[in-house]
Length: 375
Image (cartoon, rainbow, N blue to C red; front, side):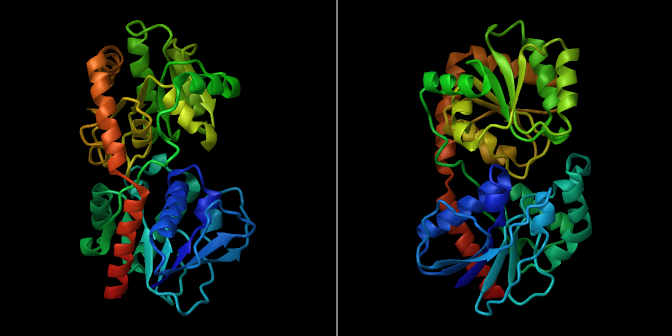
C-alpha cells in the first residue's frame, strides 16, 4: 500500500488532542511498518524529531498559519501522486479535497458540534456545520477514537457502522512517574506553583465543567489539608473570566490557581506534583488527560458520561458531572482514604499500560487494509 497522510496538525496543533494524535500515529507507523509506503504532507520548514525510515517521504506545503488552525487546514492539499492507495486526513476530515482521485479516510474524533454547539469555537463550528456532511459522504471509511464516538457518528450522519473503525488513544511516553521533589522544584521555578494540589488539565470550554469543579472545591476547602490548592491548567481563552469570577464569588480565589499554558516539556512534572486529578467533563470523544495522569501514578476522579467510562474502566472514581455535591464527597474521599488512593494508582498504571500508540497504529493499518479492499 501507499498511504498519503495530511500531517499538518502534527506541527500546527501539537499539544492538543488532534495534534498529539497525528504526531503519535505517524511516529508509531514509522516504528511498526517498513513494508508499506507513506507520503506525508508536511508544513514547509517543519523539522520533525522523528527519524523516518526509507518508506516514508514527504511533500512540503506552504506554512501560512493564519490566526486560526482550522482556517489553515481547511485548505486541501494537492494530491498529484496517482499511486496513492488511500488518503488519510486525521483532523476530523477538515481539509479533505473536493475532487476524489483516491479512496479517502478521515479520523473523526467526535461529533460534539452537533450535541453541544455552544461549547465549540466559532470557526470550527462553522466548518463542521457547513461542510462535515459532505466530508463524511466522500469517505470510504472513518476512523474514530471510541465505541461511543462510533455510535454517535453512525447515528448523526447515518453512516454504516461496518465502515467505522475504532482505534483507542494512549498517553505519550513522557508521562511516567517522576521524583516529586524535582517536579515541585521545576514547577515553582517556571510557574510559581505550590506543591500538592488538585489538578485539572484541558480546554476551557464550558463543556469541561470547570465551574462545577470550582464549586465542588469550595465546598470541601475546610475539610481537606490547608496546603492543597486547585490548579486549573490550560490556555485561558475567553471563558477564563467566568472561572476567575466564580472563584472570587465563592471566596476561594486565593486557593484556585490558573497558571495558563504549560509547555509539553513541563506537563509530566505538572501531573507528578498533583495529589489528585479531576476531570469533570460533560462530553468527550475519548478524554486523554485522565490516562496521562494515571500513567504518572496520580489518582483520578472523572465523569461517568459519554466515552469516559469506556476509556478509564474501573481505574478511576466516576461521578455524574451534574452532581456537584457528589464530586465534593469524592474529592474528600480520594484525598483522605489512603487505601483507596493506592488502589486507584495501581489500577491506573494497569489501564495506562494497556493502551499504547503502537496498538493504535496496528489497528489503523488494519483499517487502511479493510477500506482499500472494500473500495
